[in-house]
Image (cartoon, rainbow, N blue to C red; front, side, top):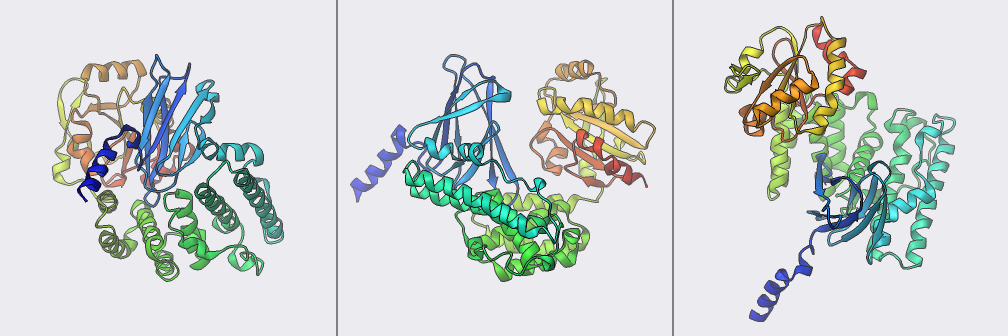
Length: 465
């Protein structure tokens, strides 16, 4: 037994075992940008995404990532998607410019990691928008979706026959393709093109409903969405137009408890909870409390999940309410070096659009032009634009304002994410936008960016009525 313990300890120290339980991505990009971005869904049920940046070494042109994943998942590298499994090492060479990069994989599992790219090149994506969908054409739509799915499966089986992929990868890839196919079949219902009663009697005959008990796919956001959509539009038969009213929400929760089991059911209920806390109304308060108590018990051994559940509940609790006195006392620095409290900024009987940014935040700077246009188009309306910077250097902040030629009222919070205001709103990345109504109530703790509001200014103007 002592020798066994010693062996386990030694194995954990061997460099080659470093990434045994994670996914390691390494690569080379000659003449590429300064850094490579990669993103993946950390928690498929709570829309928790992770984006990582790795600098490209200027001498070797190499970069690397280490991802903490305990299930198979999708990773996005540049504009391409890769199916990865715990324990994978992805070796990729990137060629071309940032806007037109091509990926070439190496190593024993290169065919795994290139699968979705090769499939897209061979089959293309199934395009709903290219097909008419109504009561009379629904059979043709189903045939088109099924043919595309069959072609994708044949492509996968060809890889398996040639033994360029493993059995475990074949299984997870087929399940992922099936997820997309089942989503395509349900699409006419989810977009309200047709009602369930208008579907042919055997429309869902190819759907294996035991598929929704699969736990291997819970790392895929697409699978959680498919489970949710079948629960909502097939089992509970809820109309997309009444998705969030309290009666429909209760029906979705009832159906989840009746038709799903174990880990899949818990993820589905967590998904419902996440949606309710983000968009829910006071009419759903009792249902949110019930789900909160259940989920806090189910996931009490998962610290990250519990933290997210508490965060979502907090975000729901602070909506449509004024800021508490402790937060209103938050001090902000003006461009003239004086201090003003958050309370002094409110109470203007105007709708207020807060922009949190920093001079080093590229996405923040990218939105400034749209914000200039938005401010110009709403000039004369009772909408106030306030900019709060998280810069840690006052000179850089002042210089950025001058360079951008940004109008509006500017303030600085030197504590940044550690400020009481940021902690109360519960955010950890920039840019971030908030909306307060004329009564100083927080209406949105994660408002749309200026570019999106330009397309629909009712988000702000509706609060003036």
